Length: 207
Image (cartoon, rainbow, N blue to C red; front, side):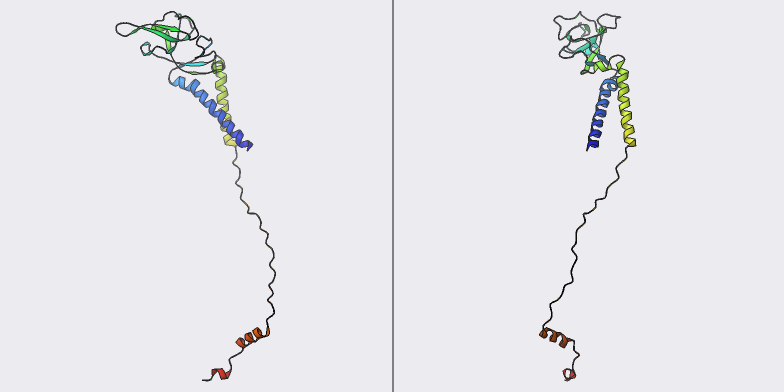
């Protein structure tokens, strides 16, 4: 029973690691999205420090009020901020000319942005995992996932299937049979048997 529980636990850990790798690494790479770690609490309680946000490149014309976007507040500076869109300005042709953002926990809006400052829209958030995948820890996390998968594969290869056991029927105690003694025959029964066994007399064959 303990072996089965350990096997199920290992499977659960493996599935969790694979799902984590998919949402943190594989899916962003396939969709050209960027995983970023949130360092401040300006978007609390929607997004908390240590959460990982997956930012997908989005044109300014595809943004809506209420979207959470990541932008570069100062051109040429690597600092990025993730806040909510509270206002979108458009010209007569419908082209976006300005975007206003504000953090959910902030009392005042940010400085107005031009579309070129917006990196993209937040696609989804992975709570708490940002601290593990931030900076140099990313290689450690990915290495741990790979090592777990390799160890699991080796375990499956080396694991021997238990030999089938044959079910043995329980022995049944059989009492020895005793010889059956017939009761002694009476004289009349014995006379009948002798009469049947006696050869047919000549007087019976006449006529």
